Image (cartoon, rainbow, N blue to C red):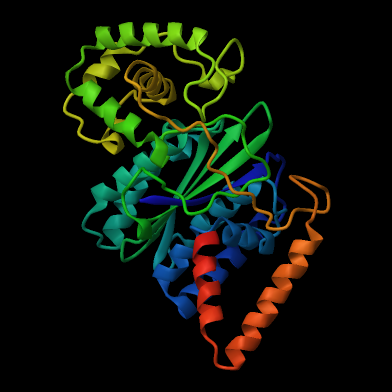
Length: 365
């Protein structure tokens, strides 16, 4: 699978007085969408972070608060349960995340989905990627999967940055294939993190491959020796690579510092692993172990790794508040003129401009 996109949201707390109304209205909205577009297309729409935010707003949530995700998905889960609508939502917040695999088995049986084990693998892998492969300071605390009776799915994960009181949302779709590299077609947020360990980047491909090869025949004790050497190099080296972060002194944020050591029992469990995707789902394999292995591969064996946040701002032209930047009024007028000319050309029989706009839309999401 590939991640479709992310959204960054403010943390919010407090009761939801209109929750029952959310359950009722949410169920009927989904029923209407299934009637018009079918269950597969309806599931697909949950992979679009802008669309899900719009749905949450219809159900009475502010567009930029974390509760829009957790409460909206919970209301839809409750509203769809036991209905004739050929869609279900599994998973949830905190402890409910752990029940996702059991719920998938139950729902998969009711929908007569044959490969229910694969759905459980998808659930585990998407959480592992968002927590360990993309280390952006947001820890996943919410996980939900939207499932159709034909087996199509969308995963919605949400991570929390406790220090900044922000949440970031990640979307995955069954349409995009089971891969870790470049898993998102769009990531939009209010800000870009300065330093992010992005093991899903094309630039990190060599590091991912080297890690898998190292784990095949390198003793755990030797890897810890390599880690100690990597940390020594890290203290004396200004840049990991020409595009990397400053690593002298305290330039790296705490969550990206190398671990004290690698857990040797976890390393031994990786014997026989053939891919980075498989590695991420090994018991005990978490952010610190992946990070330590990335330092070993990049500093000891000379591979490249990406330290850039793969975010893309949600604002095409800025905002009136100046976050992340002020509105570019000239750009708005230029784009208005571009659209006006394209529509006029289409009316006159020139379809090339419209097709070009469609291609642009597929890139920008």
